[in-house]
Image (tube, rainbow, N blue to C red; front, side, top):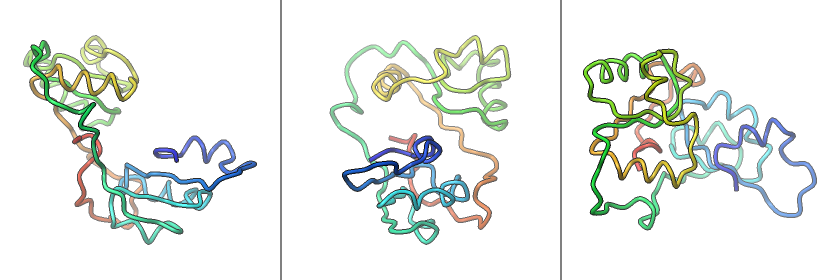
Length: 167
């Protein structure tokens, strides 16, 4: 089982296998045009949004979830006022830059950010899930700026499901 699976599919996907393969598409429907082009390389496809199941062979709905041992409140001091973890897009950068200029934004992870202000606040380009959970627990507020455009969602499938960054 791989999450997202794009890199695995690019590397040839199946190769020599001794067991069934599965992919969990956690960015549906935003990337459905891309994921639909390679998801058939997996024996099973799980999508976090039911609106794109018809675009994939042998697809099943699997909503996002959380591990209460990792994603939990704790009694520690929250040294960060406000944080963001996610990839670059123009809308997010504008939003985050305004927060930074108002002296509200403590950190960002992800990018790559074009703004020097955001690059200065960037803790890392990528962090493992355990570190992200730790950063979420250390922030008083975590914002999630969604995508402004969805270039890989030509049929404009609605996105009613909880976004993975919510957990």
